[in-house]
Length: 534
Image (cartoon, rainbow, N blue to C red; front, side, top):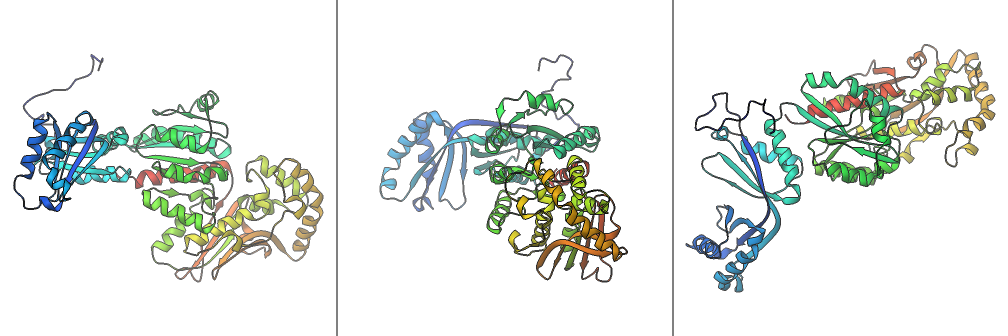
């Protein structure tokens, strides 16, 4: 180890007496072939195994692993790739009659590796094999063959050699790590991404004290990405990313992150970019969980949405999106808990956009509406394109997410939306010139807010989900209505259910801003840490 101060390892015939662990060592052998002799002609016929292994010995083929099922239909064994041709040739000659008459067949599976878990503490301990297989299965590592001797001190399994390093890391973590490890690949270093990186750096010591080791192993913006298997220094992430030479494409980023062969890896998508969402399958198929405030995945057309959910289920990966609705507020988790406990959702109503909440809580006609929009954009309260907020599409996506969460088969086109963006300004790519042009329509909004005030009412942009239908629009409310009392960028979401029928369950608080949205993402990181097995 080149470390003279280390206490070293004692190799002895006696147990250490320090409390045996389940396993003491993990090792692997690569560059193997798995040969399988199979057929009904083997059942109940004495001497088949003797003929097979005598033939292999005569050809100087060393057998590294043997496995035979009790059905007697198959014998499989692993040999070095260099010995494969001699083994196949010898078996072909010894069993030529059976092979010619199709009483048996020989299968040669190349590119295999053996993974072995060894330990005195494994003997007589239920669950050891299950722990090995559960860990491999959770990371989508397929097992081709299994062997375990009666001593119970060794479990060997044959896997694809391309997954050898990953499998070693997975088993090592399952048996030897005292902390749960989670590696994050973060895309997007705008307002939300920067706030999240700051929170991760600030909470590093706290997480370690709770037994969680969270590192950022990949970091990407729209142009480049940086990688560090041991973790990027979060006090210098800007310099690290600026010096990165990898050109950013989502598929390339996914490939490089997976190439690090780490266990428990999550993509954290802090963008509003549809191209990142389009690449989610590439990340999931490479065994990454998904955490995101990006609403676009949950608002995909129904077929693509269901295909994504099926892929996540098939690959046994988590998809966490608390910040999709309500930023850092526990809106999605509250809804999930209501449904899981058997409550029936009757109506969901409220202010779902922190941006629109801020605008209409502030707007009284004394300051032009377009100036308030410009201020909200500067503060990071709006989407990168503020038309996503003003058009009501952000609220529509959130209503769709809530609708799908309660089991409705609905698409975005089915949400009725009243847009605040003049038709002439709704087309084309966003540029800062939009805000200048939007000022020409200030008089219309001033007229509307003063008309509501003359009746003792206020304007609020609300979303409503009821009777299988969703709608979003600007409405008048009396000053004693719950949504009229919202402050700043508050979201106010009221759940009327079978149990909360007389008085709705209300979740209220800031629903926009980089820090609270990043907090919602951070809460999903904590959830994932708790979901991952010890």
